[in-house]
Amino acid sequence: MTPLAALEAFLHAPGRVVDVRRTGVGRSRQNWLFDLRHDDGSREPLILRSDPDGGLVETDRALEFALLGALVDADLPTPPPHSLDADGTAFGSPSLMMGRLPGTCDYRVLTGDRPEAERVAIAVALCELLARVHATDWKALGLGELFTDPGEQAARHELDRWEGILRRDRLAAHPELELALVALRERAPRSRRTVLVHADFKPGNVLLRGVEITALLDWELAHLGDPLEDLGWVTQPLRAGEHAIPGRWEAADLIGHYEEVTGEPVDREALRWWVTFSTFKTAVMQVSGLRAFLEGRSDEPYRPHRRVLGSLLDDVNRGF
Image (tube, rainbow, N blue to C red; front, side, top):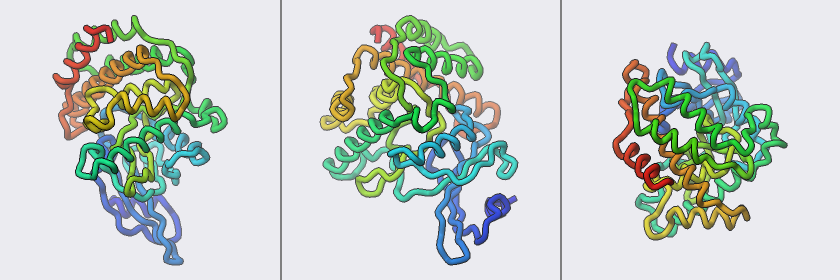
């Protein structure tokens, strides 16, 4: 069945599906953009996001759909959920449909060709958006019914989760990851508070219109946990090319502004643990990607990169 026919059969709505096109934005999903043209001539912009045959990490489409539904009432620029094909009956793999928000995606916007003042403004806006994610009243939104609150054991909870993914997907021994696991487990910090964690916060997961952030996307890894998890992800050196503007907006600037906005002090020692964990998580994603490629479920041969493993060992040897 063609995407157009599948969409029209699934929607069962008055009007017609028009302007169907596939977009290459996002590595973990197959994205189809289209409009639903209603009988009165108005158009409803939508996007269908389907799981590919193989992704870096397996996630739950129904859970993401429920989360987006809850976040409709939050002060966040999230796409409104439209409908769900939880088991892939309609589209061949689990899929969710949601409203399409305006804006464009630019993974490297902070180091791109825009004037420096614009790039700094976007960096500040990204930091403030992350603070808004963490300020979300997850209890009032009912997110405690969707996710487990790990409490002060958030670090160990996430480490256990990603160790499980490593054990499931590894095709060979990775001594560097085993060494890092031991060190991370020995030094896991206790969390001071539980927040909504995005878990893949980056410029590539937002839409921009000028310097305005119009959408925060890709919530499939979201969960309840320690806010330092997101801060560790955006300040890890491996991702400086996405999150930093050399000489104008670096990790210290991001953390300092986050503290100003939230009024919450950032424990630098605990943050170093989360930075190392983020590097470990990146390596595990690459392990999963390699399995998916070799099993014919992915076209991209991800594998643990020497730079990632080297950075992880450096962190371990420094004691974070």
